[in-house]
Length: 368
Ligand code: T4K
Image 1 (cartoon, rainbow, N blue to C red):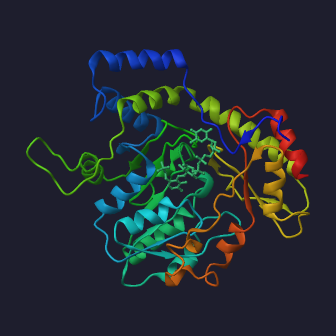
Image 2 (tube, rainbow, N blue to C red):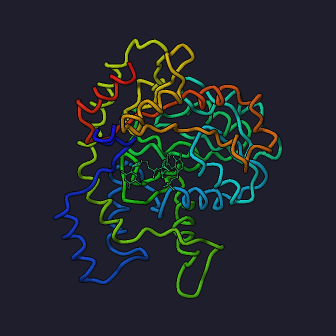
Image 3 (cartoon, helix red, strand yellow):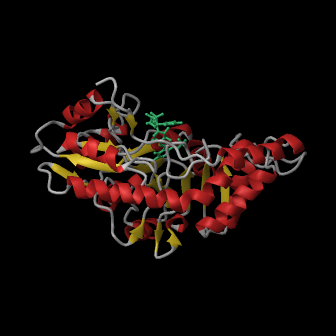
């Protein structure tokens, strides 16, 4: 129906235009546009304070942050990861000339299953890269045990996890490194952007050099780095976004709970299991469209689309079923039964801070 308001899976939060214009004036006056300028430095310190972490390096986006993180750890051989994620997760492994090995997931959360990971560890495994899917943390204890027992590196793709905490403690301090994304579609955005967090100051120092080609000073270059710098315009945007974040997350939470209320008990619709002890950023509202629902998942997707509601099938197709990955031995659908089950049934409904109660009611009427 053409005249219905279009609803997208997400809409970005934006800072106040007047406040942003003031920041732009500052850029116009000092003519520093990029390369670790004053706003970049301010953004980095504000992020550390906000997230409660001591060591963090801001990057131009989450994907470059993932590439640099793997490179900085000097990995060899194979990296075990999940097929149920955005392609950037596996791409970052391939870009480092490492082999991705896909393990299966927990079908209730979409997160990598530690038991399935354990079965795939060999002497060639140098790292494990789980994803906290939808900002819902993986089994942190189990992965920490695996890290210690097998002496492998543990890199969390925490692209969805800005501000996710357990009893006021950021989960970004788990493992060797965690990578964030500040893309426009995330709960916290700086248009594009990302960051790497670690407990290890030497690693973050290395990654600080890496994002500027490896330059230590005008004459010395340490390692072959990359251009992963965030510019001053994005840093200014990010700084202002931090002030509105808790308010925006609160609005998302209200939407999330309203959805749950309206969809509770609908035959064939199930929710992803979010572990209750964490505080979340409510980036996504995924539902599982089971076989006893009146339509297939794609049938529901099409029904919503016909009414100008653009849900998304995050994460379908599975990475392991894409042409680039499907011939890796671990990508076989018979080995990844849970991931294939969830990938075929998942649907992510619109969720963002400006979504109204009426919008949610309109969406839910089409689902019920
Ligand atoms: N690891 C994980 C687990 C990730 O999910 C991601 C990114 C990464 C790593 C890599 O991080 P980055 O390098 O991106 O920092 C989106 C995002 O581009 C991507 O950042 C995100 N994950 C992924 C899950 O979703 P698309 O192709 O689905 O986005 P797109 O452009 O179709 O946008 C979805 C909807 O959002 C649009 O229909 C309308 C709305 N939208 C989007 C943009 C960009 C707006 O209203 N305004 C906008 O500016 O990938």
